Length: 412
Image 1 (cartoon, helix red, strand yellow):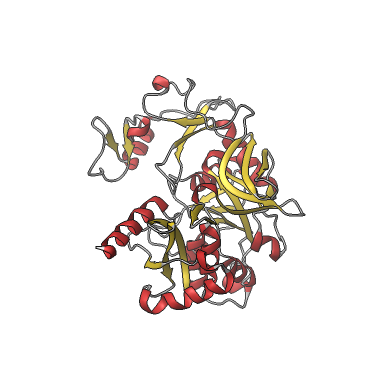
Image 2 (cartoon, one colour):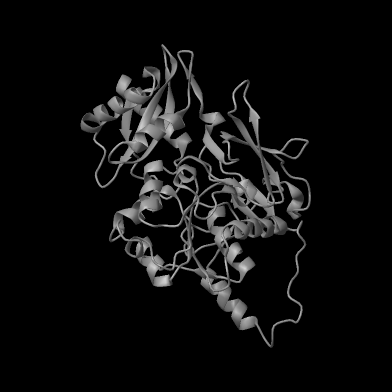
């Protein structure tokens, strides 16, 4: 709230801490007052917006640092929805389940795609399990992150028959919000879910690349598909290797970041930009294109660290851990080390049972040694924090702090 000089917060409850002068407004009261004040027929001319008019402020996930307020224009959202539709068609009779929070771009994009297509936003009940919500609403489309997909497959009545595992109404199940373990994608594909794997970011108004409908399993397992309409993607190669930083551009690229005190209340004024003179936005993600033009995302540039002179990419370790039996989620972060400079430690969440380091870590170490060099095997394995939101990306800065605190405690 402080970052954008917020004047009001729309919420059912007032948060215990908020900047001075920020009011809390209840959504139900706002809608009621708007309805009561409405008199006569609707205006003949609907409100019109130009493509370059400011439309929304959406905070980034903050998984690698403080969240930033990204300013999108009306055009960003329009072209995002249009490009999505050209790949995953959405018709007026369709229903997209609102399975992601509206304060993230993935949830907001669901609403805007439905507005673009004249489709229905299917809103689940507050206590609806995901599988029940899909069936109750008759959803044709849904957007999920990896943790949601895992829960969905765990609760599906059967993995053998498509009409049991996936409702007959389903046309597309869009996966995003971070890497999805290949074993999970394969299980969903085998169960008949119409999977589409995507790569996107808040600054690009959601999807950038997405696999095509009925894409081959190999493409779903190892790529995030091709760039959608109105987006451009290139890879800035790192030396002689094909892998490099992913850069994005196009009509869905946001206008810039807004911070407190900038713009003087007028969002047309200058604000913080993140792109170079040529307009390309460096994402910090690493990847390359395969022979078929599909994007393979391999990790984050700012997560790579050096241990004893060796480069370590945490995502490579996490990918092996996620393939291990019983592992639902894994995150690897560095901690300071007097000998090697930095060493990897892992946080692990098991499926259906607490992670017990003494019993569960040895087989994970063995699996890692079979696939990775010894310097990449984490020194320590910690249980996944109980207070972490399983629906969203792990907060790596928070995990780093926790790992350092536990290392210092062990040392003392």
